Image (tube, rainbow, N blue to C red; front, side):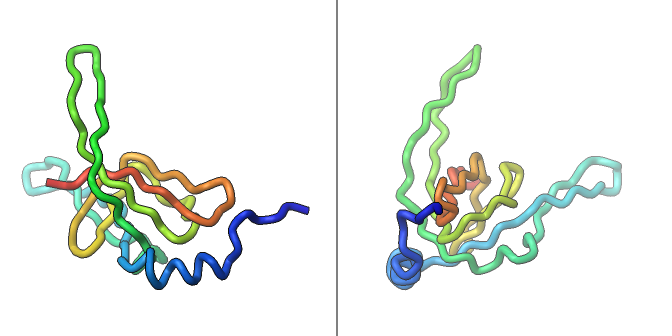
Length: 121
């Protein structure tokens, strides 16, 4: 029998205080404009509206390519459940602010999901 390291009531208590924000996950919708160019927009992913979350302060992440090294400023969004449907082409919207999802990682206990994101400018 597998036992959980985190008691479910702990997560309920944390949701009131720590996960005080709400997140909506949006999926890409591709369409064409009048001259045939691709237009990318986003629509809400069904069942992924108003998810309890917490946005961590911005942090830096150095990215390297063969030609350059650049700083990709990111935030970490913690969701209070495991959401395996979230992928890297999606966006997260918290308090009206949009973030591109760089990495979506559910934890090993299926209790939380960590989103590594970049602020959409």
